[in-house]
Image (cartoon, rainbow, N blue to C red; front, side, top):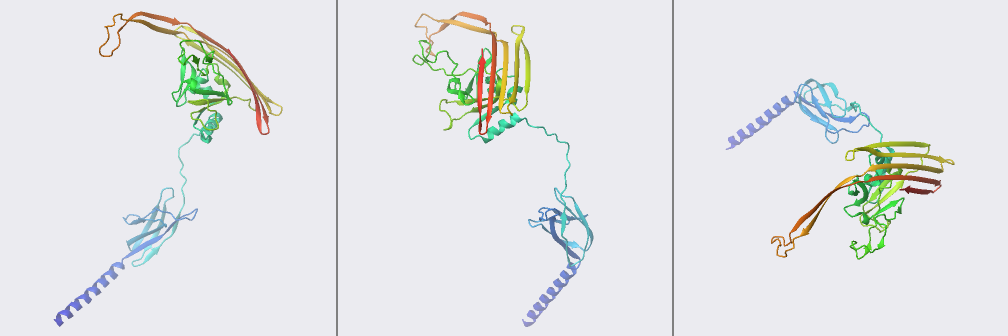
Length: 383
């Protein structure tokens, strides 16, 4: 038993000595490389830099502290390379000594990426003002700028408003005339100019009426505003408020449309426009529009005067189809499925509605700038 213990102890000591000699022999042929990677400009450590040895599979990536370690590198001379997105590649020749650690700290320079040509176009002042108005407003508002109003072929202010989301228009002989907000009828919306509500144009008599076809107990409540007479060339900006806030008049359910009128710019301005159109239904070239405007500022740019005159004529001919019907006289002739009495079509009428809409208008807008505000005089004429 004693001999067995001696033999086991001798084998254990011999094994430990052999392992130590083998480890010393192995470590004598390998070394390691470690270091710190920083930004050459700021001096901050870089994370995720790929550091490797050329023509080998040895390498490592820098950690969150910018440190890297490449272990078990055979002794010899190598080329150490480092790369990272946004930085110039880094290379250096190093010599690894077996059993030793080579500490190599280096910095990397940020690279300037030269791309293809980029064309930057300027944003129109009116469009920029409209976007800023929407962003800065504490209400749900959509804004149409002066630039957009004039560059689109809209006949009047109602047509320009119909391009906004959630806003549609009613039509008369194909022409936009009234505004529908969120699906609510025009009489439920408020139309304002510079914050002042316009009078209703939906009916010549607002209030009690003897018309038997008015279905509100003899009261005419159509308070809608027709915008066909409002020229888009006199408007600087149109704002549509789709929700009421405590600082607004509680006289509308659908929303509020506020039109801000143009003012005279700093320098004298004059413009003239002529448009001609063709109507295939009537085979006529009689459609036309002429707009003449001018503006200037006086007394050190305190007083501004803007004047506009317009004349237009459009062919609004339309074809109408109508039918008349009469009920079958026999009370027994009732549809068993629907429960309705059958009817017979006894008259069909097809006619053409001949209409040419001629409009004349003039606008005079004067504003006087005060130290803390301005005074504005607005005069609108249309026929």
